[in-house]
Length: 302
Ligand SMILES: Cc1cc2nc3c(=O)[nH]c(=O)nc-3n(C[C@H](O)[C@H](O)[C@H](O)COP(=O)(O)OP(=O)(O)OC[C@H]3O[C@@H](n4cnc5c(N)ncnc54)[C@H](O)[C@@H]3O)c2cc1C
Image (cartoon, rainbow, N blue to C red; front, side, top):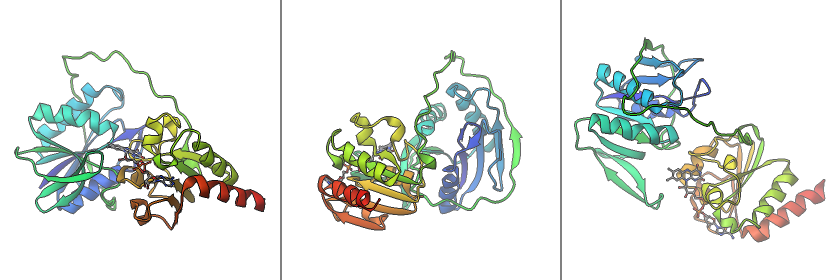
């Protein structure tokens, strides 16, 4: 099997999850090549062809689509693989439509000859396989182990014309908010916290520990905390020495963002919540009772 992996770059640097694309390819025993737009620093280490386009058009997806199609033209892969990230969500459907190929998105595993994908917001899983000769796939960050990156690719510079149907006029870049990636302690609020008022219990514990406040996506969607504090596949990747998950179930998209944490303390009323599989300590308790007690105990020791 031949895979064309679509790498991802942020501020000139390759995002670390790109190693998971190679992990996915290794699980399939596939031959790999990669297309990458905008990398100004180190290139990924692997054996294969690397199609490189410059960063001038960093925010213009019409160019990115053309770059990927140019690499497909040369490689003729069986499948084109993206990360299931905001970049992949934007680009993969454009590429699949241009190829008239099946799009299978959010792959979390392999199941016989098919791909395992989540549906109903992660509540059920389906096994599917493409019926077109070639396919476009997106893989869920955190679902596949990273592959060791070694080797030196043959670099081929590519260029392409933009999509004639759309003219790119400009973009507004997001404000850079709080940087959770450097925090050594993060106390995160999940939906189980119950309300914006109760988020203050999380904030108080975080202050007592000298840490930062994080959040799961429903907490951000509800407006209880700002988006810059979201941890997970569509939020920030964090690796604090201590991660306290308060009323967080442990969905794969959340785990993808915090699996690099040192010690994980989870507080949850459900002893069978998936967060238990990554927690060093699971406290089966109501956050409204446990968090004030823990905060008071920490403050009493100061
Ligand atoms: C494409 C995509 C991208 C996503 N990206 C992200 C992402 O970046 N980050 C992210 O977090 N999610 C993300 N999600 C959403 C993810 O699938 C989950 O829906 C989300 O992580 C669940 O958040 P939660 O654990 O706070 O809520 P829930 O899953 O509702 O869990 C709440 C937990 O709180 C517990 N609980 C309830 N009451 C209490 C109480 N009083 N005390 C203690 N515990 C209590 C419950 O037992 C439960 O385990 C994404 C989903 C999709 C489809």
